[in-house]
Length: 215
Image (cartoon, rainbow, N blue to C red):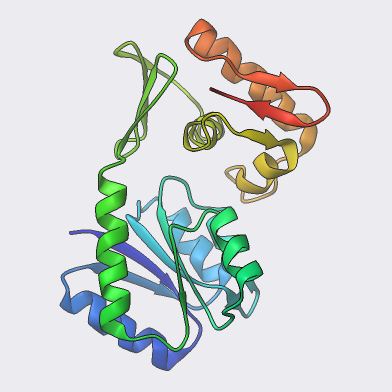
């Protein structure tokens, strides 16, 4: 059964969505705030999809997105303008739905997003393969032990192959296990550790004064 994390503070919208999703056979965890979302994530439950309201009482959908790794994302928002849409996709959204929406349309988008995510459970970058579903990393079929933050860092590079990522972009998408933002100096340390563990199997290029790129 595929697991969905729904973060929506509007009670009427949430109750309708929970009912519709459960009728489709999904297991749904509902929260109403960033705090409740992080509580659900901290249980260790792995979600196949997160449906996130952009405007929450104590933050935004981006705050929840930053705490998730390897999870497909659909943002819900009442704002339907091009800059907001672009910002959502740049922030890691797989899809974007504006309110009000038709339930059947949202369910179709959920199914499409989950199908696309299931086709991407194994990622390859350099000589490294990543089993996203299992959270495991291999170098030429040999397992590599990575910390949670090192793994999240590798996933960011794997999902942005060939792209120049600024340090700020990376920092905004990596959280430590306590839920605090990783500091700039800490990022440098983890890049160094990742290079040491992966060796010649992956080249992490430093673009001085900007960030990093992995082809």
